[in-house]
Length: 204
Image 1: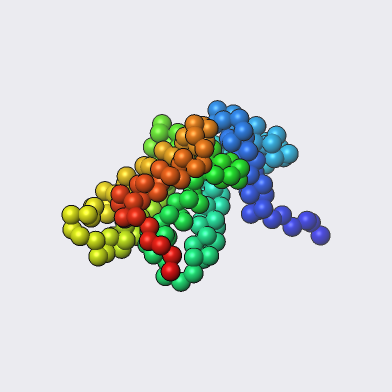
Image 2: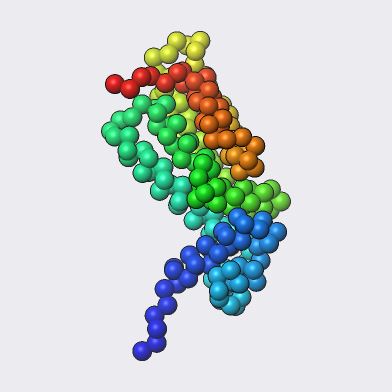
């Protein structure tokens, strides 16, 4: 009986190799041949599963997204039922910052993909949808966090969400470059959340 091939597992093997190549050597090193060597398979096999570099990059970004979603889900679950919107926001955003080696590896791939889409707008369509969904979620949480605040202490949730995402991305880039330590990034994130949502309330 011929051996049954797990195509999903093979795609993941190749995508993991792609992520290592992009994270360790830079986007310019990503090619079918380099990824095949890293995965220990033939270039023909890589091309069977990913006909183009665009397809490889898109799949790798999906893996990065799954990693991030899993981290956020675990962290948010640990907050218990009905966490305060500001607490939920901070917990989620902290998990998306590259504060350990696993998140730094994912962050380098995401940054490489973002740079790649800057000159390949046709590849960026899926990323646009994800960004819009994330901004919508952030705006909803900001809106909820401002409940009860005086009108002159409120901000436009949609604009604030755009700014908050920009702060998150900027902090991530500078963390990846080693420009400052995690403590500095977290303090900057807290300062931004204070401006948008007000200071964190004491637990209990």
